[in-house]
Image (cartoon, rainbow, N blue to C red):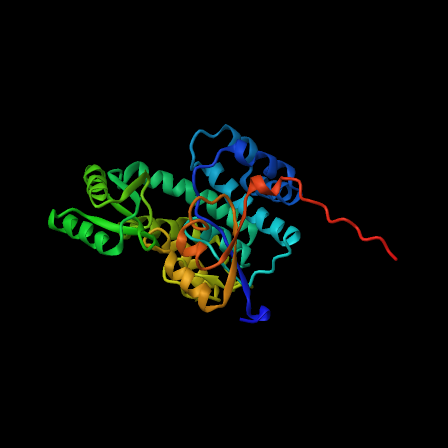
Length: 317
């Protein structure tokens, strides 16, 4: 492949638990991050940094907005510091919000507003609905063993839904909490490794009422436009170049399973050879399907505040 055919993708990762102390130096020290935080404060009507600092919930409204803001600020840091010029972007799970903003499909103020209002809407919904559901993640379970696990749940008459396909042996399945311990026991018996349970659940068709509520209460006031940069849909790997597609991708995150292998396949078809992961990531830039397919460049708050080696000047002759 010639160098001119080699392409870069920027990926905004899904959100994991984040502490203010992990991002404080970048969030309050980087000039772009400070500018975006100030703009977010104007939209929110409160100090994002102060609210995030005081938050005790890993997925509070402030934590979610801060993750969005830092992911976007890190993308700008990568552009100016690493001289990247992405050809395409993707945002698995929560990262879809940042991808919508970075691609130009959604303005930064609208992205902040959407993230905050979706956090409130979701928190209120799960106060009353589907309180018995959890999403279980696990690795070292090949696809044929996954099918065996799902067949056992069907035989028991237990509702379930595959929420995430992360790699060839890495999945997330949403079940009723009463079945979680049994599922994890079967995973161990098959040689797999249960990782953690997520509450509230995610990416499950049963959450259609939440999607409908979010569309009515949050998305009606948002203005999506055609993205300047194509976005890879994290649900099926399709390439999105229109406003309606990006809007549907973000909304469908409630009800459609995440399929990261499909995203990887699309990026490979587009001749992507380098993936820049912009944000705190413990998954998408690290799983074998990604590392074996691309050169992965992690861009996170910790590395962005490290001193960078200076290039020595060459004396003139």
